[in-house]
Image 1 (cartoon, protein in one colour):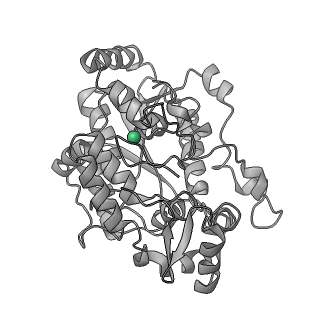
Image 2: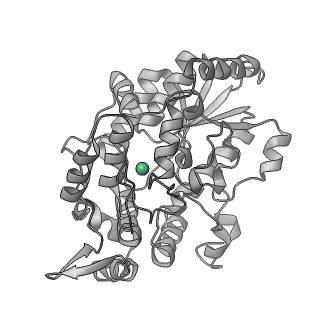
Length: 369
Ligand SMILES: [Zn+2]
């Protein structure tokens, strides 16, 4: 395990590559981001919107997937108010919501002024797929991501909306897929780093999870979407993507951060606060690859010139061994697993190649310095 010399990302992150100077692909992408003519990119998006607006009659011009988070509030605002698109928001309702998440989603609908469709996946199937993904992959939110990408594509087909506007391309922003070139098109989003090569078919058990139960998990054929002239894009291709900047805009529109302050392991109180199940998913990344929220958030501050590497090293070392204790109880309750089973799974996924025990505590063999 080694760390990027410019940020604090380790080379254990799937898909990341380091150059000969020991700089990671996320940093290389960040350096490239600074050379982009963003005014020109804004004009490109303007031209796309001008060519699409009104082509669906009185129907919707575009779909914005939303969670009630800061980024989705910003996306909805941009498409409705800056690009003047008739916007339909689509939310895959979280099953264990936070108070802030509910209030922020309501505030977005009210203050941005958009129609919202909420898709609630039936819990019995969702629980089973999530539980299997937790046990087999150590990645329960895989199910969440798949339903989000698939449901949004299905909704675009149903409403004949010609454009779907996603937020950032995570590979470009966070250095996955070997820092693949930034792309405007999100047509292949269902093949991104959150889904990888896994397929829903693996989870069909003939009981709780049958083909008829997974309509919203099954992504429509990408060629079929193309034939219907439905395209998906990343807003982050056309506008400098910065979660903190999005947060400031969302705040003007009624968004609030977590009232009780940052969750364990977090530097900030406004990231992924709309529901309670994803925190465990992110923490499993730490067990497997040796980094999670503190590294992601510190890198983000560093890439946006709000933190030096020395400050990032300090804060990651302070926070990374914290445990996401806030939601473990509700996580177990939702998935119907006992805390004993939960901790057995933790132990199973702890990567012993990168962790060892120091005075009875699991610590990374290669400390971040
Ligand atoms: Zn880096």
